[in-house]
Length: 522
View 1 (cartoon, one colour):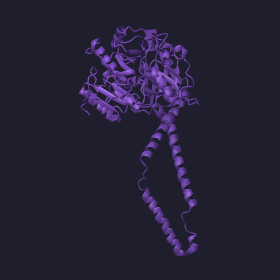
View 2 (cartoon, rainbow, N blue to C red):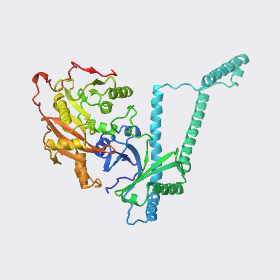
View 3 (cartoon, rainbow, N blue to C red):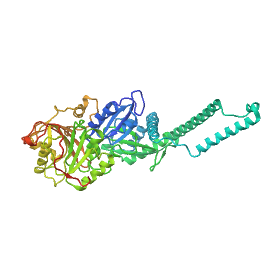
View 4 (tube, rainbow, N blue to C red):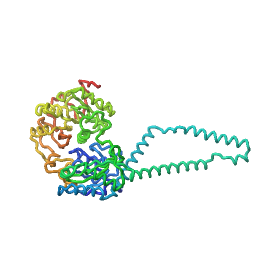
């Protein structure tokens, strides 16, 4: 296993150590994203996880689009050896893994508190900016009473003459400053007491819950529940924390497998992949963002999803790349209504146009679209030969020369297009360094945990052309959709393919729709 860099969970000058979970096949997208968004260093991957070091704050990390969940790393080390089937020895190794370095736990708890505290202060500050603070109940009456008291004292002083006036208590700047100092001291004491209470909670009154996952050979000996129980007992004895399975202050995540042992703290209760701006989920948001991220979307472009469904791809693209015109089409009224609701929930109804139409007969002039991004339907009803060919031909027609097409294909569709186009796998045309890293992990220092068959299928760059004639395959990524796998395939249109000149427009030109069927929600 590659070196983990600085001590996990610490907060050195170079940043703290984190990791994110990702769907299989999305690791290269996430590695590229943490470098771009967080200026992360020491980026490395293990199947399903990406580790990195960064000085970024929590709001910046919340913007990651290809990650599932975000964790603060506590420990990562070589896997627990499973040389025998003796369960007791394995559980003792798990306990040793937890108790080996108690300082890393305390440092991680402290860093987590800082990250969450800064995030909370930032949210409160933004709320104060949006809503000016109001006086507390009764504060105005207190101020009025003080003013009346001062006026009353002044009246009494005038009645008793100048000599008596000096003896009477009056409001002075010095007294005001003294009152202010007293108030500030009280606030400081209150803050200090709050911090001490929080520290006490972190040490003794903290409640926690353990989520443990075992896979590979270790799963044959112990279960995740057994490893989690041992972990919980070890933490209770080590730090005096209390277990709470329903509403804990802290969650502990542990994953034990044949490649590594890792433990971390989730920083957010809601996964990063759960988008607040999408009301009805369709395609996985992380997959949709990954597709858009390689589509080379530029300002002023026209982006089309001719089978938009619930509009997930369009929403993800529009959230990330503004100043672009987006258009979605679908033959289903139900899907268009759902897409319309998602656009309204995301506040993107004015930037994404929806229309009802078939992908095999798009109401668009030829060479009028800069980018096409679409999820090709799966299933037995969708015929591999005729249907996929007619869809690709129509997409090819509306895509301008030099334009980009990104498709999500089933394994059958991908294999069919590969066979029909006479394509060959090649590793020499990989444009992205992260893709080369997946095929040659030893060159980057990342752990080499994938099998040769996984490496060969995780990334394929295709040569040759599709049956359509002008679409050149650029790169392909095998990704997981849960129970099934699929391929994100990128194509480029190299030339016009025998289209009638009367139907063609200049590359990049965005026509007004001459004829179109309005969707039921517009």
